Image (cartoon, rainbow, N blue to C red; front, side, top):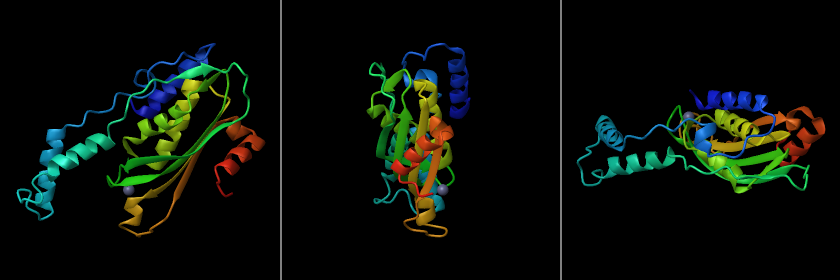
Length: 219
Ligand code: ZN
């Protein structure tokens, strides 16, 4: 099951439930267990890649490169598990919770090159509120994968909607893609902006404009 369909299954479960589900570990609910990186396999493949690139992987300069590359991919593709801490919204807080400029790095699945930037993530609380650092944790968890920016944006929004049952969710990602700035059109400094809106932040015009204005999205 893909991560996206796992999220959809979770949404269906929530629709049937009267109360929002209690927080349980992320890996148990919405995202499939990430694939294990076979470091030995990556080392052998990188050694072959160096040979195919006309380099000698046995040279002193490159001898340890396959191991370093394997370690780098294991880190970039190894999400950190975390507990989803939520709290009752005892104060009946109704306004938007907005976290701006959360940095992230992910790997483009088309070129295996990084794309990096910042996220602006907001939600309108329902019966529960979220530890603020968890917004960054969710983003980081989803980003440590072979991704496209559109899917990463949607995953973060769907995940928050399913786990927190808020009245609305807004996610904006701004990122530079190295596959676009270093090669191809070499459009250095170009920023790609994606957004995903859910609930009132999508359907209520005043809320939507408030979010997009706080996110600095030009319309
Ligand atoms: Zn790419």
